[in-house]
Amino acid sequence: MKGDAGHLEREVKLGVWPGFRLPDLDGVLEGIEGSPAPDQRLDALYFDTPDLRLARSGITFRHRSPEGWTLKLPQDDGDADILARHELTVAGDERAVPAELASLVTAWVRTSSLAPVARLHTLRRRVLLSDGNGAVVGEVADDEVSVLHGRRLALRFREVEVELAADAPEELLERVVTRLRAAGAGAVDPVPKVTRALGPKAFEPPELAERHADVAGTAASVIHQALRASVRRLLDHDLAVRLGGVEGVHQARVATRRMRSDLRTFRPLLDEGWANGLRVELGWLAGALGEVRDADVLLERLGSAAARLRPVDAEAAGVVLARLEVERTHARGRLLRVLDAPRYLQLLDQLVDAVSGPSTDGPSPRWLLPEADVPAVTVLPTLVQRPWKHLREAVQAAGPDAGDEQLHEVRIKAKRCRYAAEAAAPAVGKPARRLADVVAGVQEVLGDHHDAVVAEAWLRSAAQELDPAGALVAGQLIAVQRAAAEASRDAWPAAWRKADEGKLRAWLTT
Image (cartoon, rainbow, N blue to C red; front, side, top):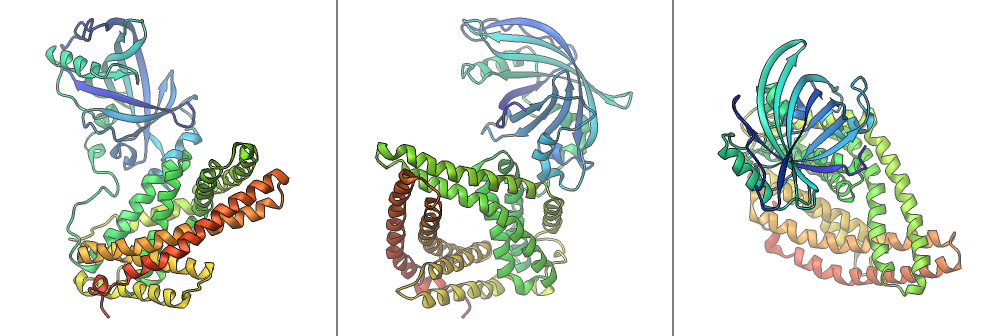
């Protein structure tokens, strides 16, 4: 693979008619020279699931001779005309799909399978664009594409691609496209070749495509929409987790936690066996994500504190952080094994199957009880009342001299209350959003307290195996974490008083 990150491909495609000829591109921009390059004959075999989940999501997975395997993942470039894709390549022949690329599309494939869906032969005529120093800054390719079904020619089309290097002049793309259009090329069309080759089915919406439906109807529609959003969040960040992204782990963990919280909040309206079984599986996944996320939080927190130490302590601080890096590496290895396990694939299938049906204007899924088919505004306040009540009880039990575990329990209850209010917000509106916002303030300040307490505990444990210099630095870092914990302890009552204002919870059923 071309490194863990691969590279970003940015290109513009234009349809052309059979008689089109590439114009002279010399001087398309001052200092740019266009020179013909040898023609290429490319043979590409594309892989997808039987229902074309990859193509429908803008993903290309192919083997092309002589390059080998390529996986192209769509990126949001902010320009609808530019086809921006994260590209990763692996050497090999077409008889064996490389596991390192196949794993990256797990969220789409799950328990389905990858198989050949199209073979494309392409005659590519190229013009290289070079700057005044002779460096190639772009390529214009005139592609004549033949789509084969077996040995039968099923379709033939032609298109021109403009691909620029990352350091190409900013205005070069617009100038090249303008000249191509003047020569008779059609409008910009960002559709990948294989999508066009596969036909109408490949143009269908992707799984769990975002819907702009009115969810302020029944409780069933609101619950369905809340779970659907979390499933999308989990699927959207599976790839980032596999590529090692810190934010991806965070977002996937939030998705699993939110789903577990929603299943608890809406329990009276859900099939009990289905909801309980799903919460168990989500808890298993959240545990694996949590190990890595907790290490990430510790690394960020302790790294920031270590950066403020005196230079004389920098080396010892590096040893302390390196120890934590090793723990994070081991936790990530365990997480990747979880993500490749059949149990995880089956969980994703279960989640997608549960929320892929109608949400507002069709029959409710089987996991929703008939009692959910009532106006959301009449039942959701009652359901949110329960996590609010549990939060108040936790605060009262904590008292003014609360211990660390009691404050941690308040934080957990605040998080559940916030998630419940956010899930109800589409139906209830501003009152639910305001409650969610102020409760999030309680969660945030107590979250910082919990992180400081966990950091101190980790440092104390690690210090037992460090040399004197490392133990000294650990002691300094412990003092920083203890001060942060005390600051959060002093701040949280004010955050709670703000959340406990009567007008904020007037919409709840008492």
